[in-house]
Structure formats: structure tokens, C-alpha cells
Image 1 (tube, rainbow over the protein chains, first blue to last red):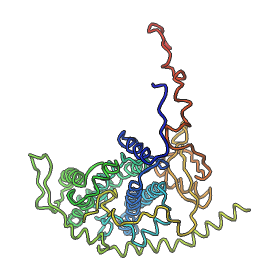
Image 2: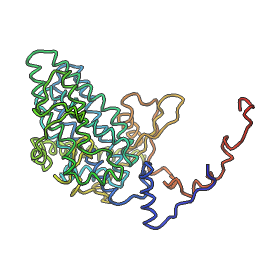
Image 3: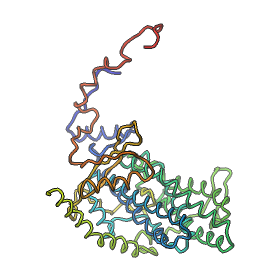
Image 4: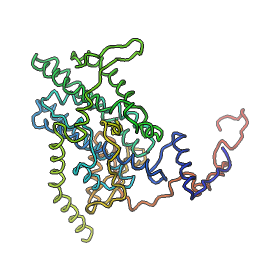
Length: 319
Length: 120
């Protein structure tokens, strides 16, 4: 133990920056009231906010099936899962707010379309097998993205991700179990599973973002410790994990190029349709308008509840 | 496609050309922010787990239960309005903590005890 530590020379921008860089270099966490570069703050707000929006919008495709669940057991599971997504959104909005943005402003930016959410939620859920495919593939891909984010350099984001990841495992397993149950059923049910996997496989691969060569932001985000792996690394990891799971399930993944590569010790696979992905990002996906309209309606229909609760709190406080 | 990345956790989202809303005032008055502390089980301290907005204390407690204890994470919850918390400066090297920095004699390892002395 040393007897004295040199105190930080406060004041100059250069000192603050070098202190920030040193914290990152030590692999220490940045906390909300620390000084941070403006670019770091804005990158984080965008990322965390859009992650939160994805959780909140992500309630819709599956929420669609709650009233039509095939059994009470499945209904209870689906309700719990959709409630978790709301919780994940709240953890993340809280983390974003520590960076100086208000919750209501974030909501406004979502429903006005200025901020985005993951395009995966713009695909429709056409059968109950989609609840299984989303759990297995979409949440599986999310886990690949989110586990490294538990070690992200911004403390509140990392802590939110730890909570999210603990719960996400239930999401993936309930989805896979749902699909295995259907695969033990009738030919019609097995066909339903295959059809669903055919629709969700490529969008799940798109969740990792464009190939590294087309992702110039990745380098800065990795230098800041916000992001820990590149898009292609994570996509490869997901494919390698999913192939044996598909085999155990008895479904075929809809990629003719999918094959084990002995030399690389990884699976080779084809590229998703990036034009389709870009259309979704631009707002032209199958359900973009519906998802946003639904979120806007929920927010606006809730206005009187917020006003009433505020009025009640004011009355109680002055009583 | 140039400014898209999987940074959004739940899938790739655009990062360039997206407003952040930092330092933009809220569009309507917001409910106060509460910090939430949960006692995981008897015998443990309450630990900070996150925050939420609520119109009043009772709503904060109910929301805290729904958001932070869906899986038996706690046996007791504290909620406190964030604006009621007094905090030290964030930097650990702040002079605030300097008084303890040079008092190594407060730690047991400061004292040399002969190897043949047991149980100390």
C-alpha cells in the first residue's frame, strides 16, 4: 500500500480526457457523474435508448398471441416473458437517463420515429410456432449480443445488461422447449415449426448488423469499451451455437451454404439480404407502421392515467 | 448501410443521424425519479438495484416490486426520491477520500507479528 496518491489535477480538458482514457485503459467502469467526452455520452445514449425501445416494441409481436395461447401453461409463460421485456426496457431507460436525457423525451423520440429500434420486431408473428422461434433464435441472438455488453465500460449499462441476461436465458429456453413440444406433435405442427424457422433465421442473422467491413463505428465503440466484439464475430458465434440446436430439434436451417469448415473450425454460412434489412431500418418493413402506431396509442391513451396519478399525489402531499 | 451496428443488444440499430435528446427538456412534467434498494434475504444489507419514476412513494414501492423483484430477488424494498440523496463527488481520487488514504495503520496487515504466534 502506498502512503500517498497523487490527487487528480482538476480543471483542464486535457487532464479530464486523460483521466477518462486511463479509466477505460484500466478496464474500469465510467459512472454517470464522471466527466466523459461528448461523443462517448451521445453514442451511449443512442445505443441504450434504441436498445430500450427494442425491448418495449419487442413486446408487440409476442403480445399478439397472449389471448390465443394454446394452454394456460403457455399463456402464463408468455405473459411472464412479455412482462420481462417491459422490465428490460425500464432497466435500460433508467441507464440512459443517467446520461442526462429524460424518459419522456426518449418516448417522444421513439413514437415520432426519430430514434429507431431493432428491425427484427417489424416482422409479423403468423403462428404460435413464432413464439418459439423468437425465443430460440431472436432471444438467442440477443444473448450473443448482450452477454459481452455486461462488461461494457459504462457502469449503469453493464449493470442493466447483467439483470437482462439473467432473465433472457428463460426466454430462450421456453422458446426452444415450445418448439421441441411441437416437433413431437403432428406432421402439421412440425411443418409449422419449419415454416417459422424459415422465416426467422435470416432476420435473426441480421440482428448482428452489417459485415464488419461496412461498420465503421465499431472501431470507436470498441476503443471506448462500449462494444466488446465485432458484428461478424458475434454472428459466427450465433451460427456455431445454433446449428447443433437445430439438428437436435429436427429442423433445417434455410441456408444452402451452411457447412462445417474443418480448417476454420467454424460453420460457413451465407449472407442475409441486406437490402431487406435496410428497408426495415428505413421504416419500410412489414410491420413498422403498425408497431409505432400501437406504441403511440398506448402512450396517448395512458395520458389521463399519468395525469390522474400526478393529481392524486399532489392532493395527498398537501392533505 | 454504413452506420449500423449490433450495438443495440437486441439487434442492429443506426447510430449516425439519430438525435440523443441530451439536455432537451422533458415534453411534459415528469414523475419524480426514485432510487430502489432491495434486501436480497434476511441478514443482508439493502443494495441499490436501479431506479424508476413514480407519482408518489407508494407507487414507487409497487413499481419497484414489479420491476426489480419478479423472481424472488428480495424480502424488503426501500425507495427514496433521487433528489433526497446527498452524494460525494464521483471521483475516487477526490480529496474527499484522501484522509483515509495515508492511514495504513488502520489495516491489520500493517502490523508485523512473529510467525510462531498463533491465532492472531
